[in-house]
Image (cartoon, rainbow, N blue to C red; front, side, top):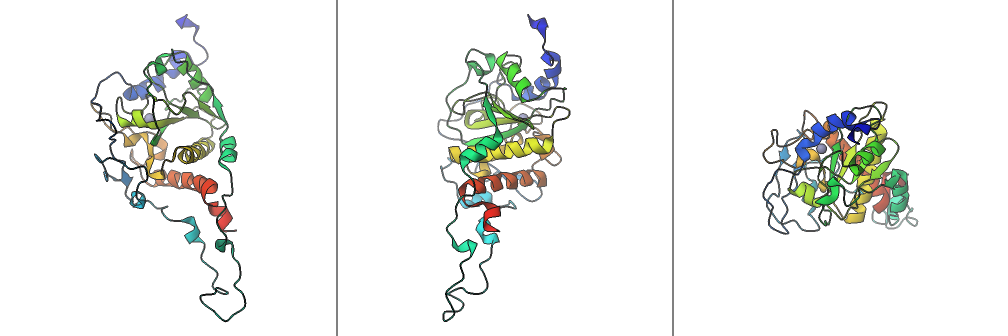
Length: 301
Ligand SMILES: [Zn+2]
């Protein structure tokens, strides 16, 4: 039965298994006290991670300071300066004020549902009996963790990973979505835990895991774009701030060297969050703005 090996089969998935073994759940590590999650980090302009709130209980609504150190903080509306003439404040006796786009109340330029349809999510859930789901627990997602498969095998697209997960070919590994240039396949509901980040750590217990495909011929640009849209939609759906959309790197794996994995490697600079990661965050923010506050294209029209 094991020899049936479909096109990718075990052999093709070997790089993924090796790459993700560090994410496995078999080794034990201490569980945090209930309700307390480690802090999130903010990366400065040199890509150095600062531990701004570790060990503190996080509130549902983080302060705006969470965005400090990133290049994209701020209200997009501020990028659209008010018209220099015609404002009532600057010329009280002039003709009625000229209405500008920025004077309108912001209307989201896109509905969340329409953004979701662009993502093309296809549900293909792992069976509760499969190894990857047997140890799942209920979860209220507070973070979104971005990975890349590091599986360069031909044909190792989102559907193939879904098949591997459903057939328990990846041991106890599991995550919520796999994205490629065509689709985002959902493997788990977002209200249960996956096993993709840091053993029994908060990355697994509180985050939605998204894996980006890297097989030959797959467009990385389109895959990243789909992932950014999916992250923006999930931020909106679960009330997750941008500061909690994190690379796998964010979650230290106790007992592993290096503890912080170089993942997703093509969005990190020398293995750490830097300008590439900030670029991805900016992309996510643009999509999130589109469905929440008018969007950059709307206000600059
Ligand atoms: Zn990863």
